[in-house]
Length: 232
Length: 302
Image (cartoon, rainbow over all chains, first blue to last red; front, side, top):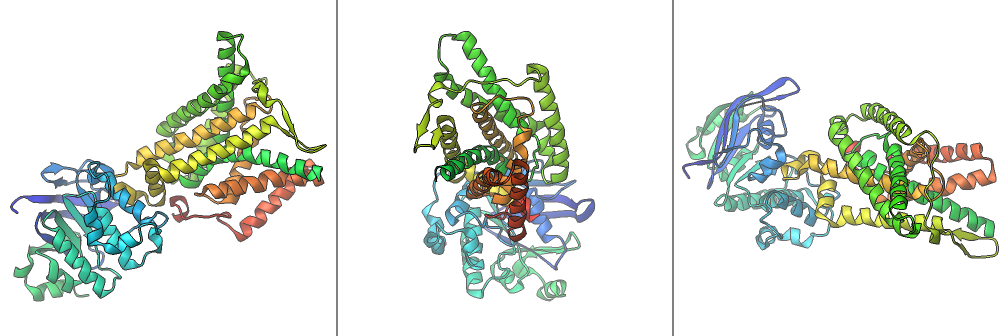
């Protein structure tokens, strides 16, 4: 509980010269769901990409379980124990559901076959194992994306807007799943849907213009100010 | 009837060489978005590898027949070309991913360098490799129609190579990683796939199959430093017509161009036949701009 599993230290990030993040500090602990909220375009997804090494990060440091992964390429970061569920899910459409999950196991050579708990958590995936990923519905793809990220038993799970474009019943299901997962891993989630954030998260970071403007335990945050920061 | 059969068989045999040449290209051009003008020279390197293996073998075992070492030639052609491809990928090509036009110019330069290098080493004159004796036999099917053993062998070789590539891409872990990296590079990397290593292996294997194509060509006639030039355009056409990313596309493209070319030439003349096959290609691309069997890939999406 005390030590942070994922730490971002003064991270800056830039897309072809124009800076997007101006020194972001975030810590996510095992046993907690940490949410990163903010309006559109403030740099939430960029923060996630920075963790994964998909954008240029000129300065700062990123640590997983105390080890710096800052100078590692993306695939090595995945192997260091980060599971990534990107915005828009990014399922491999031409690959089968099974192949998508098997790809998730690349990050951890210790996992030799798809563990049963994946299918207990997401029974729909077992039914559709041989279907192509692109043929699944949005909600099913989201479940597949989470399964693909957690099959390697990561230390940190990062999710980018998992509720986007998904029907309420599946959102509830996803909420249940990540609440169950937090005992095994630190969870950092970018989310726009405030109700969902207040319901599942333990800790919140609010982002404005590439900086963290407010943070704290979800229960202790000033709800009115939060509402105001997030409203258009 | 015999004439039609003969025409069809010759066409299929041209198709099988095109298919061998295009398999590698389908991988590097189709999946990686590199317009590799040096692919023809990989064919040439494979052919010259076969020539070198033959000469070394003949000098070491002067008594033995050519029946044995052609397998060795083929394996050597694959590996030598794959290694040349690997070196080129590491040194030059990997800096060109996502820059199709630059890659065209650079690889054209590489192709000139490779041609001149071979010309300097082996001389400008054509050299020949003797095909294994058991392939010299023809199989008489009907009165006038006979299938040449060499051409049958190349046809079989093309089938074997297609199967091997299909197995590699669809049944192995490495193949799965390659397909994932081609569909969504960032996501594959985020899952722990070393995409740079994937590129390297993909390029080397694609080059290696060009080497096998080169080795097969030596069975049909003498080879020279510019042998690759005569195959590169047709090989590109094969990939473009068939559509990228699928082996079935490559097979279809090779069949259309391989069978269509000689058939048109038979009914008209050599140059008019060429014109007609180009017209067919243009018409196909009008209706199927991404090729007959298209698949979304990284190269096409961005």
